[in-house]
Image (cartoon, rainbow, N blue to C red):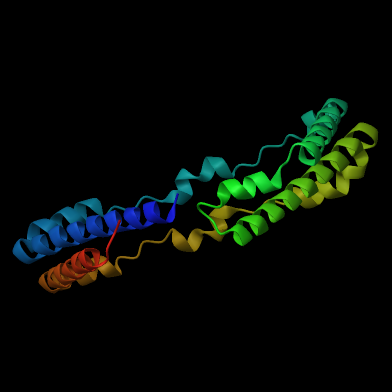
Length: 200
Protein backbone atom coordinates (compact mmCIF):
# COMPACT_ATOMS: atom_id res chain seq x y z
CA UNK A 1 0.00 0.00 0.00
CA UNK A 2 1.43 3.38 -1.03
CA UNK A 3 1.63 6.37 1.28
CA UNK A 4 -1.26 8.16 -0.48
CA UNK A 5 -3.52 5.12 -0.24
CA UNK A 6 -2.71 4.73 3.44
CA UNK A 7 -3.54 8.37 4.17
CA UNK A 8 -6.78 8.05 2.21
CA UNK A 9 -7.76 4.92 4.18
CA UNK A 10 -7.01 6.68 7.49
CA UNK A 11 -9.06 9.67 6.36
CA UNK A 12 -12.05 7.44 5.58
CA UNK A 13 -11.65 5.68 8.92
CA UNK A 14 -11.66 9.07 10.64
CA UNK A 15 -14.91 10.01 8.92
CA UNK A 16 -16.56 6.71 9.90
CA UNK A 17 -15.45 7.19 13.52
CA UNK A 18 -16.83 10.74 13.53
CA UNK A 19 -20.19 9.57 12.13
CA UNK A 20 -20.44 6.75 14.68
CA UNK A 21 -19.59 9.10 17.55
CA UNK A 22 -22.16 11.65 16.33
CA UNK A 23 -24.97 9.07 16.08
CA UNK A 24 -24.17 7.56 19.48
CA UNK A 25 -23.83 10.95 21.14
CA UNK A 26 -27.11 12.24 19.71
CA UNK A 27 -28.90 9.05 20.79
CA UNK A 28 -27.58 9.39 24.34
CA UNK A 29 -28.63 13.03 24.47
CA UNK A 30 -32.12 12.61 23.03
CA UNK A 31 -33.17 9.13 24.21
CA UNK A 32 -30.75 7.69 26.77
CA UNK A 33 -33.10 5.04 28.19
CA UNK A 34 -33.56 3.01 24.96
CA UNK A 35 -29.81 3.20 24.33
CA UNK A 36 -28.99 1.92 27.82
CA UNK A 37 -31.51 -0.93 27.47
CA UNK A 38 -29.99 -1.95 24.14
CA UNK A 39 -26.48 -1.69 25.56
CA UNK A 40 -27.43 -3.90 28.53
CA UNK A 41 -28.87 -6.48 26.14
CA UNK A 42 -25.79 -6.48 23.91
CA UNK A 43 -23.22 -6.37 26.73
CA UNK A 44 -23.15 -10.12 27.30
CA UNK A 45 -19.85 -11.72 28.20
CA UNK A 46 -18.58 -14.48 25.93
CA UNK A 47 -15.52 -16.25 27.30
CA UNK A 48 -12.80 -16.85 24.74
CA UNK A 49 -11.19 -19.29 27.17
CA UNK A 50 -13.92 -21.86 26.57
CA UNK A 51 -14.10 -21.18 22.85
CA UNK A 52 -10.34 -21.71 22.40
CA UNK A 53 -10.09 -24.78 24.64
CA UNK A 54 -10.13 -27.29 21.72
CA UNK A 55 -7.16 -25.48 20.15
CA UNK A 56 -5.17 -25.85 23.38
CA UNK A 57 -5.10 -29.63 23.31
CA UNK A 58 -1.65 -30.92 22.33
CA UNK A 59 -1.43 -33.31 19.38
CA UNK A 60 1.39 -35.85 19.56
CA UNK A 61 3.01 -36.69 16.20
CA UNK A 62 6.30 -38.10 17.47
CA UNK A 63 5.40 -41.76 16.98
CA UNK A 64 4.34 -41.26 13.38
CA UNK A 65 7.40 -39.13 12.68
CA UNK A 66 9.86 -41.66 14.09
CA UNK A 67 8.02 -44.54 12.42
CA UNK A 68 8.75 -42.92 9.04
CA UNK A 69 11.89 -41.02 10.03
CA UNK A 70 13.80 -41.91 6.85
CA UNK A 71 11.03 -40.58 4.60
CA UNK A 72 10.65 -37.38 6.65
CA UNK A 73 14.42 -36.93 6.77
CA UNK A 74 14.73 -37.40 3.01
CA UNK A 75 11.96 -34.87 2.32
CA UNK A 76 13.50 -32.30 4.70
CA UNK A 77 16.98 -32.79 3.28
CA UNK A 78 15.84 -32.55 -0.34
CA UNK A 79 13.65 -29.52 0.37
CA UNK A 80 16.38 -27.63 2.22
CA UNK A 81 18.96 -28.39 -0.48
CA UNK A 82 16.60 -27.23 -3.22
CA UNK A 83 15.63 -23.99 -1.48
CA UNK A 84 19.28 -23.28 -0.67
CA UNK A 85 20.20 -23.80 -4.33
CA UNK A 86 17.38 -21.48 -5.44
CA UNK A 87 18.42 -18.91 -2.85
CA UNK A 88 21.98 -18.99 -4.16
CA UNK A 89 21.21 -18.97 -7.90
CA UNK A 90 17.84 -17.34 -8.56
CA UNK A 91 17.44 -14.87 -5.70
CA UNK A 92 17.91 -11.37 -7.15
CA UNK A 93 18.04 -9.05 -4.17
CA UNK A 94 18.57 -5.90 -6.25
CA UNK A 95 15.43 -6.58 -8.30
CA UNK A 96 13.34 -7.09 -5.17
CA UNK A 97 14.66 -3.87 -3.60
CA UNK A 98 13.79 -2.00 -6.81
CA UNK A 99 10.26 -3.42 -6.73
CA UNK A 100 9.81 -2.30 -3.11
CA UNK A 101 11.08 1.26 -3.63
CA UNK A 102 7.69 2.87 -4.46
CA UNK A 103 6.43 1.93 -1.00
CA UNK A 104 9.62 1.81 1.11
CA UNK A 105 12.84 3.84 1.15
CA UNK A 106 15.69 1.97 -0.50
CA UNK A 107 17.83 1.65 2.69
CA UNK A 108 14.89 0.27 4.67
CA UNK A 109 13.92 -2.14 1.88
CA UNK A 110 17.52 -3.34 1.64
CA UNK A 111 17.82 -3.86 5.40
CA UNK A 112 14.53 -5.77 5.57
CA UNK A 113 15.50 -7.94 2.62
CA UNK A 114 18.92 -8.69 4.10
CA UNK A 115 17.31 -9.82 7.34
CA UNK A 116 14.79 -11.95 5.44
CA UNK A 117 17.59 -13.54 3.39
CA UNK A 118 19.54 -14.39 6.54
CA UNK A 119 16.39 -15.87 8.09
CA UNK A 120 15.82 -18.07 5.02
CA UNK A 121 19.43 -19.23 4.98
CA UNK A 122 19.44 -20.13 8.69
CA UNK A 123 16.09 -21.88 8.33
CA UNK A 124 17.42 -23.96 5.45
CA UNK A 125 20.51 -24.93 7.45
CA UNK A 126 18.38 -25.95 10.43
CA UNK A 127 16.07 -28.02 8.19
CA UNK A 128 19.09 -29.68 6.59
CA UNK A 129 20.56 -30.57 9.99
CA UNK A 130 17.26 -32.05 11.22
CA UNK A 131 16.76 -33.94 7.96
CA UNK A 132 20.24 -35.49 8.08
CA UNK A 133 19.76 -36.41 11.74
CA UNK A 134 16.45 -38.14 10.95
CA UNK A 135 18.13 -40.05 8.14
CA UNK A 136 21.20 -41.14 10.08
CA UNK A 137 20.51 -41.04 13.82
CA UNK A 138 17.02 -39.99 14.99
CA UNK A 139 17.94 -40.49 18.65
CA UNK A 140 20.21 -37.43 18.37
CA UNK A 141 17.06 -35.28 18.28
CA UNK A 142 15.66 -36.56 21.59
CA UNK A 143 17.08 -33.69 23.66
CA UNK A 144 15.93 -31.11 21.12
CA UNK A 145 12.50 -32.73 21.00
CA UNK A 146 12.17 -32.70 24.79
CA UNK A 147 13.08 -29.00 24.88
CA UNK A 148 10.77 -28.05 22.00
CA UNK A 149 7.82 -30.07 23.31
CA UNK A 150 7.30 -27.91 26.39
CA UNK A 151 3.64 -26.92 26.43
CA UNK A 152 2.96 -23.21 26.88
CA UNK A 153 -0.71 -22.45 27.42
CA UNK A 154 -1.81 -19.25 25.71
CA UNK A 155 -5.12 -19.43 27.58
CA UNK A 156 -3.33 -19.14 30.92
CA UNK A 157 -1.04 -16.40 29.67
CA UNK A 158 -3.99 -14.36 28.35
CA UNK A 159 -6.39 -15.11 31.19
CA UNK A 160 -6.14 -11.54 32.50
CA UNK A 161 -7.68 -10.32 29.22
CA UNK A 162 -10.70 -12.63 29.56
CA UNK A 163 -12.21 -10.76 32.50
CA UNK A 164 -15.30 -8.53 32.14
CA UNK A 165 -14.71 -4.90 32.98
CA UNK A 166 -18.09 -3.15 33.37
CA UNK A 167 -16.60 0.16 34.49
CA UNK A 168 -17.23 2.10 31.23
CA UNK A 169 -20.82 0.79 30.97
CA UNK A 170 -21.54 1.88 34.54
CA UNK A 171 -20.07 5.31 33.88
CA UNK A 172 -22.26 5.77 30.79
CA UNK A 173 -25.33 4.56 32.71
CA UNK A 174 -24.69 7.14 35.46
CA UNK A 175 -24.03 10.06 33.10
CA UNK A 176 -25.67 9.27 29.74
CA UNK A 177 -26.26 12.84 28.58
CA UNK A 178 -22.79 14.01 29.59
CA UNK A 179 -21.33 11.07 27.69
CA UNK A 180 -23.47 11.97 24.68
CA UNK A 181 -22.29 15.57 24.76
CA UNK A 182 -18.65 14.46 24.94
CA UNK A 183 -19.17 12.07 22.02
CA UNK A 184 -20.75 14.82 19.94
CA UNK A 185 -17.85 17.14 20.74
CA UNK A 186 -15.41 14.40 19.74
CA UNK A 187 -17.33 13.84 16.50
CA UNK A 188 -17.18 17.54 15.64
CA UNK A 189 -13.45 17.59 16.38
CA UNK A 190 -12.83 14.53 14.18
CA UNK A 191 -14.91 16.06 11.38
CA UNK A 192 -12.95 19.31 11.64
CA UNK A 193 -9.62 17.47 11.55
CA UNK A 194 -10.67 15.40 8.52
CA UNK A 195 -11.82 18.57 6.74
CA UNK A 196 -8.69 20.58 7.54
CA UNK A 197 -6.21 17.85 6.58
CA UNK A 198 -5.88 17.82 2.78
CA UNK A 199 -6.07 14.39 1.15
CA UNK A 200 -5.13 13.76 -2.47
